[in-house]
Image 1 (cartoon, rainbow, N blue to C red):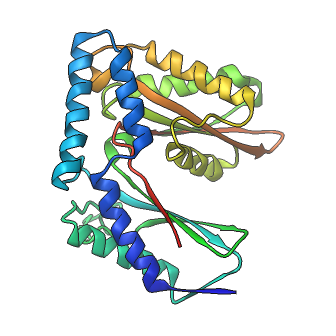
Image 2 (tube, one colour):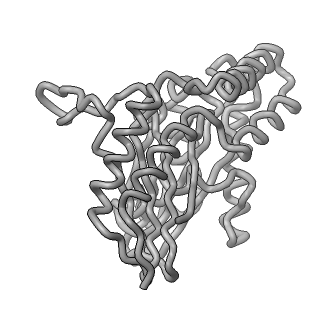
Length: 280
């Protein structure tokens, strides 16, 4: 049994909060730059140029890519042969507190969803997702989630008879209704199957999957490609000013579900799709 001190988790989470907010992941950069090379609409070209300029400035000056530094979503893959000394939850929240305070990142978390909605002043608590996996390591992914895009996400319990076409129509409808609000070009995470809550979690995890990776099952990989084509044909374009670059990628995650159900969740992220990972 491998021992890990919870302070190590705190240190990693603090560092990843800052790095994720300042340095856009290579897969997202590559996708944006590839879309810029293929974008024919002059206004869209200019906006994509500004987006590229923005994340390059953030790199050089160690500043946040976007003023909305998001809620801290922290994904933990914990090896079953690891024992963490101390509270994992407390360690993660201390990391978020330190990262957002020392990194001068905007703190956007409020204590309660209704009522006074008083700011917690340190961006805690984090949204923590645990997964027990084989091995003796802990994989930590910090994915700050801004709410301009989060607010555009939807979930629906489709009828089984709606089938694949119903799923695709729903995904496209969600993006169309979102329009320019989530700061396109967007990344679209789709969760199909499971239960109401599992579909939403799959959609969230789909967003942080590398954009060049397709679903391992060809049927769903083809669906990803078709949905990306349909979404980009909407003509919303970067920041809603038109063009063929409405989405950078559509990532689908799936799992078994009940014979009577077809849960589908769509989680949208803006072009600042932030995520950083480290393994202890």
